[in-house]
Each structure stands twice: as structure tokens, then as C-alpha cells.
Image 1 (cartoon, rainbow, N blue to C red):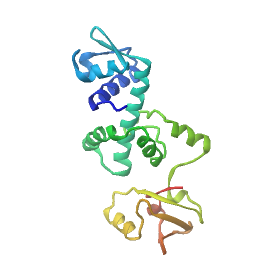
Image 2 (cartoon, rainbow, N blue to C red; image 1 turned 90 degrees about the vertical axis):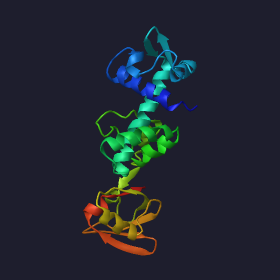
Image 3 (cartoon, rainbow, N blue to C red; image 1 turned 90 degrees about the horizontal axis):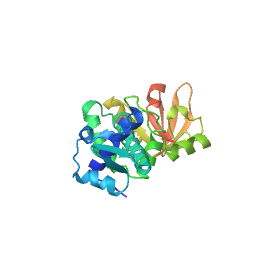
Length: 214
């Protein structure tokens, strides 16, 4: 089931107000809707919320859906900052747009790629998903910096995290591209790795900017 973007935004606002700010309900004015708003009717039709006068209350199913929605939004924020290096107001706008694309299954992949973050860039809690619980049970670290690999270990390159365009170009010229396999052959005194049939040496600072899926 895919809700409209506006319906998801109502659930987000409600979840923040009720679950994080401790309110028991939200007023129609608080979420910028009227009683005849189509998005509100959509949520009532799915039995996610109920309207009592001018107040909107969560139903149990709506609380669960609201948590999923806020999780997608905050994962999108982390993706904008941690991977795409987009910050400020632009990051928030793009996160709002992108979150609606993180349908069930896609959010799990993004969460795993980000190594199951617990907070958004603003320090607010990201509700954990089943993938987070499974990672904790299994000890699976998900995506880690190259520095977390031991000599002889290999993985798949997930992304490069650097603000230095020259450094980014240098790594890409080495073949350090998302999806490529990387094998760490030495970790001291410098990091030596192999991509394809080529071998390269880099320092610790650069190695920390290569993120690998083990």
C-alpha cells in the first residue's frame, strides 16, 4: 500500500507531536488540513487516524505507519548528508522528496548501506527496523570504512565519502567505484588494496573515506 505524499507528511507531523513531544492528539490546524482534505480522508479510510471534532488521533495501525514514515524521512536525511554530501536547507528539501521513494524494502537497503544509523543529522532518533535488529543479533556490521577490514579480507565498495573533489577523482581513477570488489592486502604502515588486476597504496585518512560492504 502506497499512501499519497501529503498523507505521509500528516503521519510524520502527528508522530513527532504525539510520540516525541508527548501530545495526545494534533489539531487540524497543526498539520495544515481541513476536515474535507483528501489526504485526511485517505488516512481515515485506511483506519490510520480518527477525527474527533477538530482533533486528529492515531489509531494503533496509524502509529505503526507513522513510525515507518518518520524512519524513511530520517534515513533520507542521513543519505543526503553521509553519502551525497548535500547539507543545509537543500538537504532537507531533497530528503523530503526522496523519502517518498523509500518504499518497504528500499529503506532496508539504504539503512544497511548506512550501517544502521540510530539518529538523523539533527540528533533525533531513527526508529530501528527489522534489519537493525537482525544486524545486532548477527553481529553484522553492514557497511564499514576500509580501515575496518583486515589484511586478506575483501568486500564490495558501497560509496566514497569525501568533500575533496580531487581525492574523489583520484579514487575513481583507481577503480574505487560503487559495486566493484576491493581486496585489502596490507593495512600497515599504509593501506594497500587491489581492485581488479591493479594494486594501489593510500594513507589512513583516504582509507577511512572508502566504505565497503563486507
